[in-house]
Length: 479
Image (cartoon, rainbow, N blue to C red; front, side):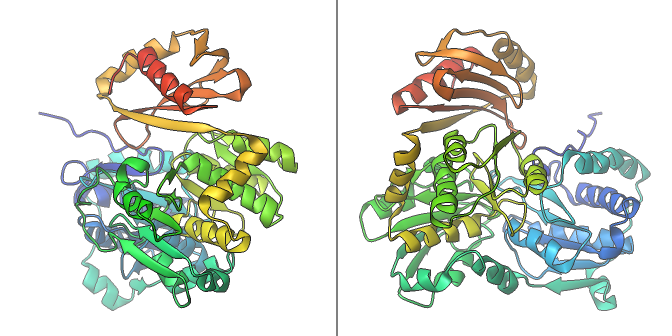
């Protein structure tokens, strides 16, 4: 008899394949463990907010979680429609809830779904929270007695209420940008919502003036047709890149499956990497908005922001990958901005959480205030810090291969990578090789997918490609 694999939380939540390990039974067990944590930590009386994305059965899984929470005597606010993860996190704070649940697998392929926990401050749950929930799940499963009642009955009793946060969330975003200036700018904006939960949200905020919007994939389709996964990276954005390259648009914006990640395409149809985009936003905050404060970045984020921090007198803090690390560091340091390589950025005064919708609005705000297009904004950054090139490759690996790969990489001691001298190594998150000039190569395993990722930031694209090839050789893998 095959044993059921344990439910494990990764970089941001628990994720599994629908109908395989992501089942209604397991969702109820995880919810029951979370309800017990809320009661134990004194957060149950504030209630719980539950939201969901556009994936297959996400609304039904959210309903199942609501049934369990309400059966535990915890007041539930259940979203009346799919919504982006940052809007769910915002609702947790706006309503003063004890915690939030978001049913989403973010940027994973269509076969996956997931369960994200958002504590009372509206950010990603740190390891100590998810570990407490995770450790209680086996006992819940063994008991076979997860309490729940029919959702319709709970709504009729008032134990579950429906809510719609879009209007108040967009009003909060308006506090960060000059929407009237954006509307009057006459921009022609192409938005690729990737069939995800943020569809229509940016357009709703900026329409009503001379600015126009064309939205691609702005409807619900749980199969994400034409996409390996709803992740706003160059390989998944060939359609909008081609449309913009043909002329007529000032920029392209894209959000991932649950709206917490952001991708940018410049006015010529070229993808602006996530590292370039974050550096662009940091420079905009420092130079145009005149803000000051700490900057938080993940180990995989560009060193351009370190240089900007030096130039503008702002400390830069490095964390492991995942907003369960960046968010707490952001709150601890009252950071101005935080970002990770995946395209997620957070901003002081909003939520300590990635927000793809607000990131897109801030890029438009930068364009409106400077009267510059994305390529010009990036040129301004390079004028201060010099050119930085970056790329990442993902290699699918089987669990049984991981130990051998780690042994090979951990035992490697190259003197040079891409022609640059190796000056140091560390294992803050994966295996990092630091090179002369501050350039770097990193090999790490994803916390959300069965992938090994190899990252490199170098002074030229040729060196990036060489470093990635050498990284594959160090790991003993090939695409």
